[in-house]
Image (cartoon, each protein chain N blue to C red):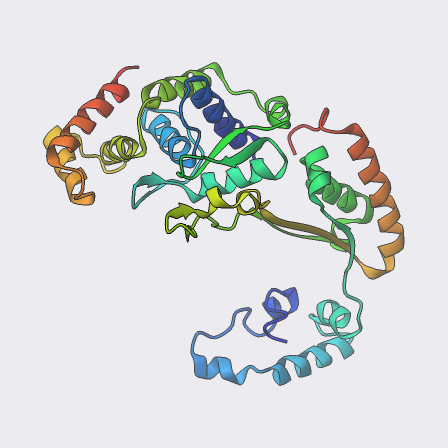
Amino acid sequence: VLQNFSDDPYLKKYGSGTFPTDWRELMKCTDHEVLAALRDAASSPTDELRFLAFPLMNRKHLRTIYEQVSTHKKKRPTVFEELFEFAKNTFGPEQVRADAYGPKSERNNFLVLTEDGSIESSLEVSGVIAGLAPVEFGFIFVAPDLKEKAKSRIGAELQRLLNEGTGTSKGV
Amino acid sequence: MDFHRHALILAMIEALRSQGSRTGKTPIIKGLFLAKAAGLDVPFELFLYKHGPYSTDIEDNLDQLKSYGAIEVEPAFDGYGVKFSPGENASFVKKQVSLSADEQAMIDKVCQFIRSKNVSQLERLATAAWIRTEEGITDPDDVARRLNELKPHISLSDARNADREVLGFLQVE
């Protein structure tokens, strides 16, 4: 649980907000303690962490409404930021979250011993390695109750943005 | 995404190409550092690395440019790294941000300066510029000694020549 939810807002507010640097203290904070605290917070209407614990314990976590794909980005480089803004403006910022990573290239330039004994760059001997796209993902999530409605609104907005192409977006 | 940063990188690639220079990571990064040393506001984090000033920040931005097709990358078939060229969405970057005349002029000036330099020469020149502008050492002998100390494979004589050359570049304004 600790590992899977290490970036979770609940854990950031739980305890002192950070894990102890002393390993003996850290070892006292096991899954059992965290799950018990989550249950307590989720079931207590007055607990200040209930709004974070309840969705975790009752499968009311946010749902994915958009996953960026590279073709969308090539047609409209700012598509992810624009859809995120659209979702926040439409459904309220508290109902929407985004998670994005990259683009990041793997460091694929390494030496290769070829069959004739010469040593070449991996980028030179393999067009596949040279052409690997940077790793990138981007997700937009909404509160579970809004999922269907949000998916359809985001889908329509996505279509509109892609049809518009790269021509008009400015300053995102 | 910061399109001003993308526009600077793209302008470097285009200026290097127009000079018939290599458009690999080294000339782009060292060139942008030399532009910074000459007074241009270059919004990338740079640090002194194994072969002179380097920037993972610029590398990340190259990845971003690549991700939406503003630049293309292909292996350099002399076996040294990759070369970049403007992609089909390069015009998108220019629609977002136009570089000022001063920025474009500085980039053209840097690319003119480094156009026939190989990576070893770029290492010396950029490191000498680093010593002068980032470490504040200005006496030519001290710069040469420091360059030789940082890069022992660069002789004192080569270090002096590199410093003299880069000083000429930095002072011509």
